[in-house]
Amino acid sequence: MSSNARGVDKTTEQVIHPRPSSIVAALYTLRDLETDVVIIHGPSGCCFKHSRLLEEDGIRVITTAMDETNFVFGGDKILARVITRAVELFDPKLMGVIGSCASMIIGEDIHQAVRDVTPPCPVIEVDIHAGYRDNTYGAIATLAAAVQAGVIDQAEYLRQKELLVEATNLEKMAGVASKEYIAPSRGDIKYVTAKKLLELLEQKKKGLVVLNAKKETAYQFVDVLVAISTIARDLGNGYLKTFANLDVNVGLPRLRKHAENILNDLTARDVSVDYITGGLDEYPITGVNAGRLIEKRYSDYDFAVLLGVPHAVPMKSLGEKTIFSVTNGPRQVEPLKQLGHEHVTVEIDLHPKTLGVSHIVPSELGETLRAVFLEEGERTAKTE
Image 1: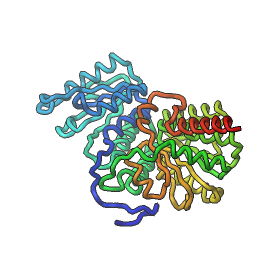
Image 2: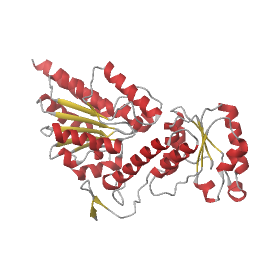
Image 3: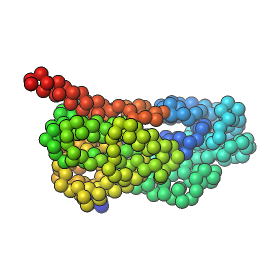
Image 4: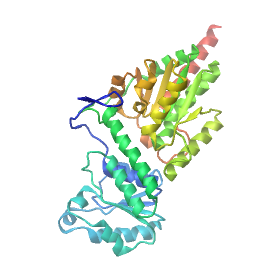
């Protein structure tokens, strides 16, 4: 094993636990480009779960429902028919057509089908299958196709591609692609973690809260920041500093709107962010940005709470302090513990809870913190 720049051992073993699909990455990228309708040229069950979830987020996902006959004789005619029908049903302003393992392995030409129909709207055409080792390939391929369709410019494509390459490297160095097999875990008990956090806040310890969330997941992770900030204020702990990747000026259109929504919600709750570290699509590098600020200005802190993609904040920036991490990945618990994150909790089923929303969503740890704080306040009142 070799050592990388983040100080994490990097393996060359093949990852054998399940990993996200490049087709799914393409679907989510089309969503972020504000595509109205996506046609998957493949079997009806391809990416079924994610397609259903994305429909909660306002995007129509349909399939050509390829079957055994199409696997042998081709499905170009049914693709053309479904494109025509999608236009009739939904009158899209922007459409996506993507491949699947079934259609790509038999060499289907989705571009020809689009040309045959000539829909009255731009179409992002993505040749993709699930056989790529890095799922981010699907996002990169989609963004390249978006340039061809005139949806984004070359500069934005290059910016996004650089971020996605960095995201891939991050997962290989310190994330769920860093080991051959990582057992899923629910992490530490949230009640115990909340008790420890509350104890530090009551002791007026200096704390840092870093929101470094990926896209719409920020709607739930930021609730932990809200809970800690409001409790600290109620306790008279004025030593808390907050960081968040909520820049409204960068990123794809949907992500900029998410950041704006969250900042508006924070203002309504009288919760402030001390430092904006970047955008919601910049999570691979905004953790580094937060780390630099910590090194420069707040190295004397007592504890840090890292939300979203905690392993993007370099350990060398954090030092040997008490670190709480909140992730939504059961397979991220073990790598975080190995990095030295003492307390790690998992927000289960976060993705379904944050699709189709426009306001902050209650988090499990945030709600537990509030309950513990209320419980201890009631206990104190009874003894006085």
